[in-house]
Image (tube, rainbow, N blue to C red; front, side, top):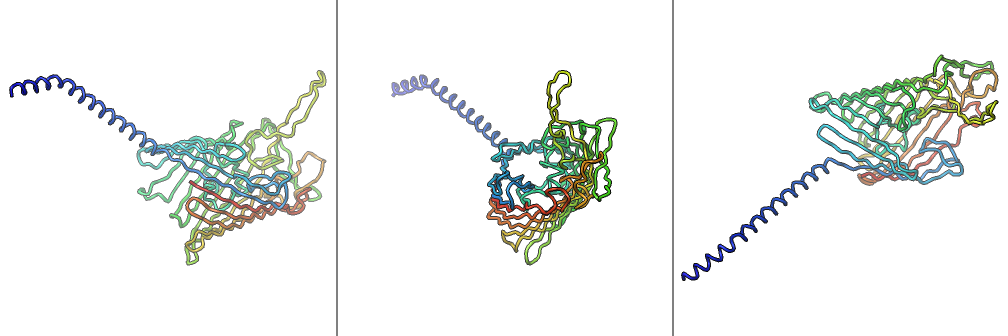
Length: 445
């Protein structure tokens, strides 16, 4: 018995260090496991702050005529009256912190990849009402610009917005006042900021444009807003055109003027927008409208806001001494025009179904001082400038049907009837054949 006890004691003494070693290894393994779990939890917490979203709009279009100029997704190729296209392929990443947000969005189509949004937002930590946004983002004017193309009831924005705000976005900084629901002032919103004024393109002058907007609302029942834009773009010449006169044969023409320095075309816009939604036994009807007016600085060729210094066609000149030929594109002078434009939507959701009927009217008059046959040729005498296709008014009537298959997929059938005023300009003496049918499928994630 004593021998067994002694033998057991000896074995225990010999095995004690090994046991200690195993326990230490177990402790290290457990500690490593806990650290790994903590790192995984931290990674998951950070990943929860990142959200991916986007949508794809693929469509087929048929135009009345080959090679038409169009605001329904861009001009048609010279020898084509129909096309398949990816109108928008958006991928958006949002990183959200407690009081901050970072957003980047790209557009992927058959034409390539282009940036759409790159900005961050900071919210004040005290009352969480004031928000600073800086980077490349939608300009705070009206409703049509800031409404996402994924939820808009027509394929494209109104002609007046595509002209004055091409690309919708601009680089700048903005201060917003967005009171929360607990403040009792959530019905009020205001935005104001300074921007380059050149859209997505790099700036080409020293002028910065101011944009401001205020709005009041009552839930989804109604909304009313006012917007203001004040900016300039610098032309490359002292010459400019602003005032109109009437020739003896009844044509309206621009009178030339000049300054002692490079002229800056003015952009002063006033906007008003509103919407109202009404529910009846037949479904929900939404009426949304906007009106814009003001002064816009364009050129003789277009009233689209310039993204670079506007230049005329290149001309070649030979040096009289050396004979060296150089090619120069002279700058185009600014032409200031008083404009008016607007749009009206009537959208009816049938009963409680997934079907919607849409009517949209939009108008853009780039120069409210000239009408119809006043626009045209007086021909080459004097120093005045003739009005051009850039001065023609357009009215567009859109009729659409939307079917929401589910929360991700929807189908749109839409027809644009475009009417231009009849002028004395060659090619514009009658209405152009530029109506467009759009059949679109959209997938959102």
